[in-house]
Length: 84
Image 1 (cartoon, rainbow, N blue to C red):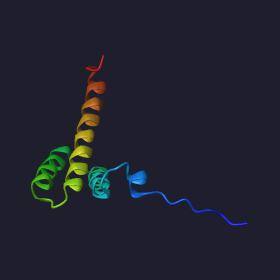
Image 2 (cartoon, one colour):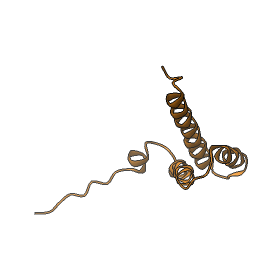
Image 3 (cartoon, rainbow, N blue to C red):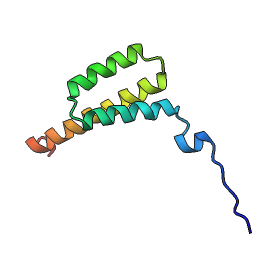
Image 4 (spheres, rainbow, N blue to C red):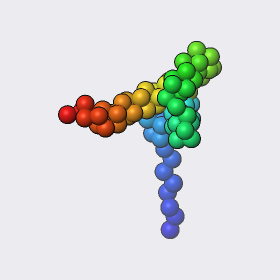
């Protein structure tokens, strides 16, 4: 008896995104987890968007920074009661 190996295409794994997109998201996530402040992440995002050779990487980084901004805003709103 043999087992059939099912090979998926790269688009099945990455959801049709460039793998660089996920690398950018991961870097922004890791930098934030390491304690980098939101203003620094925003400045880095601007620089990466302007200068990084990979559009996918820049888009992933910028999108994750935007998510972090929304997350931090929601936390502040919930702590101050503005969310109610």
